[in-house]
Image 1: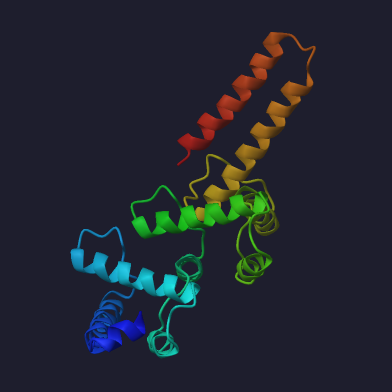
Image 2 (image 1 turned 30 degrees about the vertical axis):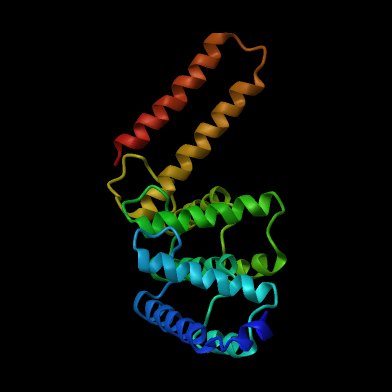
Amino acid sequence: RVDKLNSIGFNWGIVTNKWDDVFENYSSFKLKNNHEPNVNSNDENEKYIANWAGSQRTNYKNKKLSSEKFDKLNSIGFVWNLIIDKWESSFKNYQKFKKDHGKEPVFRTSGESQSDLAVWAGDQRERYKAKKIKKEKIDKLNSIGFSWDMKADQWEQNFNEYIKFKKEKGREPSTSSKNKSLSGRAIVGFLFILNGSLLYRSALRCAKCPRRILRVNARLITANANDFFSSF
């Protein structure tokens, strides 16, 4: 086909120039927006550039991309694998959030970026439980102290706060305390959850207990809950 086109004086420069033009548009888009063009964008120009970028990935995968184009794309940090790039980007954002705020991102928040990070972190935990996450990613997440079990980690944190309080004050914390600090809430919350859990378990173990005893246990848990929440 190349020979046949050459036989009629086909102008290859037009094709090359068009590739170079779109390359420049892609490079400018990345420089301006700091992310990959989205094929689902409402902007037709962005959509066109995204499709072009997708074609380069396909050509590279099928070994149909010239070394000159490959080198040129690499020179501007072209992303060959969008899935890996997205994971790395989310990892860096998660790491920065933890460093800046000293806590896990929360899903139910007004900040969209924090919600996105919470969803991403939750997805890593689910993949870990299902054994569908690569060892390299596990090691990378472990290197920044990733929390694989938020409930267990929170319990340990509250437990340590409780021990620290007992050591410093020499007494039990009280739900009627005027301590409105985060650590104060954590300690009281820890005791409430622990107490409620123990009462509930004792009720479950008492399989032959009369219903009125189970109702007493239930009322005790409810009383603790009301006392706990009314203290804040």
